[in-house]
Length: 308
Image 1 (cartoon, rainbow, N blue to C red):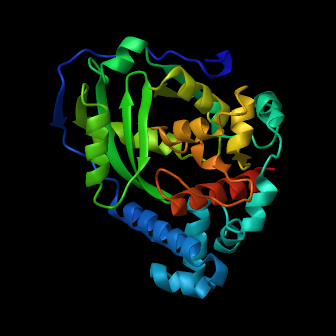
Image 2: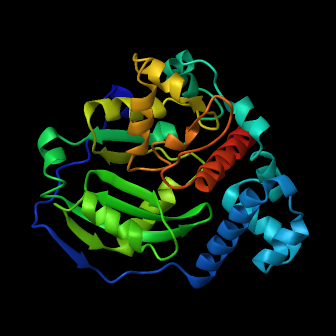
């Protein structure tokens, strides 16, 4: 891993493999309600982007007055509903394409002094050892929780060494928990909402003003890790093609393998696989759904412009 993205966060705890549950602490009901209202409004905007729904229509769907809806939407998303809709267009996606793989090589250094210095630059990664990789996390304690955010319901898993899992989930969360348990079947998994809430807050903080890197513990092959490192070099609010990423890792013919590695990413949003799209500007083949991919890119584009 390059030095810019390396940080060790201590040693993992040793315990037997099992699934146990701690008493969860849910966020305040009014906060959950606002999160869900805005999330549903965002999903509606994505599904009806061509219709450009009016503010009144969106407010009615959310059960809020237009003024209150606009204020809550901007508080959670950072931009107005109208602006968000504008960032959903195919034209906007094409404009956001970096168009040159060399940009990925220079992006990190350039971003350090630029106005779009957001949370990517405060992410540090540590790769699991080959032994840890093969054991499916045996000796790890992973605390996990399912939380509402304005841009999606998420399941987050964290070890003493950092976030190891971040996935967008359906409201019931059951399929996500089954997948999580299978991937980390060697670990001691503890459902602990209170332990993961603060991590979710940090992960989805768009201000990018934190001073302490958000640690990630990543589990993958050498090739996969190389691809994920390249994703971290795509500037916030911009997009790259699969070909761009293949060229950035020095293997321009490995476009199909790059796509496969991107699909194996277990840490959504923070390792930004959503920023890779077709050269036509079309967004497709996202592990957590095309609609979610459009949401993340629209939010990033708006946040990047707001801070420019």
